[in-house]
Amino acid sequence: MQDPQDLASASASPEKARTTSGTDAGWERQTLERLAFANLNEQKTARRWKVGLRLAWLVLLAGIFWQLFSYRSTTINPSLPHTAMVSIVGEIGSETEASAENVMSSMRLALEDSGSQALVLLINSPGGSPVQAGLINDEIVRLRALHNKPIYAVVEESCASAAYYIAAATDQIYVDKASIVGSIGVLMDGFGFTELMNKLGVERRLMTAGANKGFLDPFSPQTEPQRKHAQAMLDQIHKQFIEVVKKGRGDRLKETPEMFSGLFWSGQQAVDLGLADSLGSLDGVAREVVKAPDVIDYTQRENVAERLVKRFGAAVGEGSVRALRSSTGLR
Figure 1: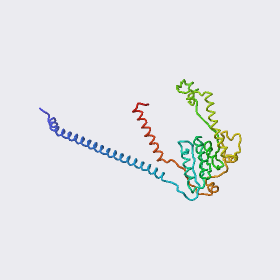
Figure 2: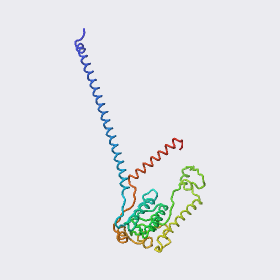
Figure 3: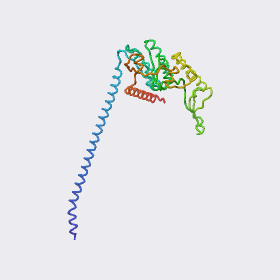
Figure 4: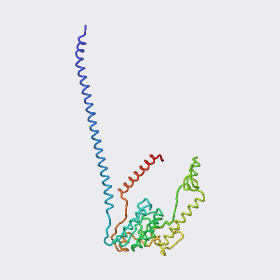
C-alpha cells in the first residue's frame, strides 16, 4: 500500500516541473534580451567612435589646409620705412630652420621690399654647417651690392663658429656684453671602440671597395695616413674661414695668436678684439643706426602643417619604394 506522503509528492511533481520549465524559459529570455541590448550598445558605441574619428580627421585636415593657405597667402606689401629683420636661430644646417634656403629666401624678401631701409640678421646660434654658412655669406655680399642697403648683425646669446662665418659678411656686428662670440675653427668628431671590442672579443667584419672607404668607421682602427688626410681637409676649411673673417672685418680686427684658434669671447671682449663693432640690441640698432624704429620680421618659418605634409609625403614615398622593391624582388 502506497504511503499518503508519497502520493502527495507525486501529485505535486507535475506542477513543480511546469514551474521549473517556466523559470528556465524566463531566464533564457532575459539572457537573450541582455545580450541583444549589449550588442546594440556596442554597435552604438562603435558608431560614435567612428563618427568621432572621422570628425577629428576632418578637423585636422581643415587645420592643415588653413595653415598652409593662410601662411602662403600672407605677404608683406611695400610699406612705410622700417627695419627688416631675419632671425638665424639654432643649428645651421640643410634640414633646420636656419638653413641656407630659408635664410636666403627671407633676406631676398626683406631687401626687395621698397619700405625696408636696412636688414638686421638677429643671430642666436652655436654654429653648424660651414657649407650652409658659406652660401649665406656669399648671398649677403650679393644682395648688399644688388639692393644697395646695409645689412647688420645683432647677436643675442651666441654667434659662434658657422654663425660668425655669416655675421662676418655684414656691415657691422652688434652684441650684448655677455654674448658668446667667435669659435673660429673647424672640427670633426667621432668615437673609436677598437680597444673595447678587443677586450670583449668582438670581431668587426667590414667589407669595402676602396682602401679608405671605411676610415670613419668607429669600429675600425684609424691609420696615420687617414688621420693626416682628415687633418689636411680641416686645415683647408679653417683657412677659408679665416679668409672670410679677415675680408669681412678688415682693419677692424686686432689679430692675436688665439683669435683663430677656436676660442670664443664675451661680447665686450669681441668688441675690444674687433670681432664686433659695438654693444647694441635689435631695437637700438633699428632706432639709432637705421633710423627706422618699426621692425618687420621677414623670417620664413616652417609651420606645423608643412612639417606634417612633409612627413606624410616622406612616408608615402618610403612605402612606394618598399612596394617597388617587393614587387621586383629587390632588397
